[in-house]
Amino acid sequence: MDIVTSYGRIEALKGVSLSIKRGTVTCLLGPNGAGKTTLMYSIAGILKPRRGCVRFNGREMTGATADRVVSLGIALVPENRLVFPQMSVIENLAAGAYTRHDRGAVTDDLERMLERFPALKGRRSQLAGTLSGGEQQMLAIARALMSRPELLMMDEPSVGLAPIVVEQIFSIVEELNRDGITIFMVEQNAHMALKVAHQFFVMEQGRVTLAGAPHQVSLDDVAQRAYLGSPVGV
Image (tube, rainbow, N blue to C red; front, side, top):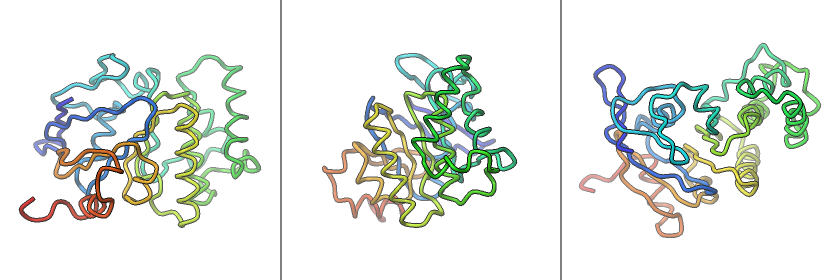
């Protein structure tokens, strides 16, 4: 709550407070440079807030290292996938379980991920860097799921993907949520995101400026603010 995160003297987050409800899909919208990725990185332990606190399941975790955050039940699917290109699909999946010590269960989960994402099943030995963009996105999601997270954070999961693949990604989001995983998603495709979200926040210039449930507002108005920011005088 009230998170302030800076890059040098530049405050990217200027006192951000929001709450993600367990079992929901929460969408974070906003124009480029609003601070959305910075907020996710601050939660994930990649960046350390200067002020404020991050709590998960009632536990204070401000400033925790990234591996500690994963062990507490939070996984991040980063923007642009960031799979390990010179490692195989199966090696990428195994890397997602690096904080786990239940090796037998990890092996079972590897096979479960290949069943859940059929596009990867026949490519288990293929180098991740040779996969299509959509396949890499599915691999990045599957890799994050290997840590068995309670909260899955996804940063721009549809960016750069063909429309048919975007629909598949959002179907996966809904399926994961039905399975009990809480989803926190940054997404530029506001209309698609708001179709699957239970609640949303709009960030502008490092602050939350709008929040609600999709059924409470005009989706066109929210999308305009997500892409362009607030109209002059608002």
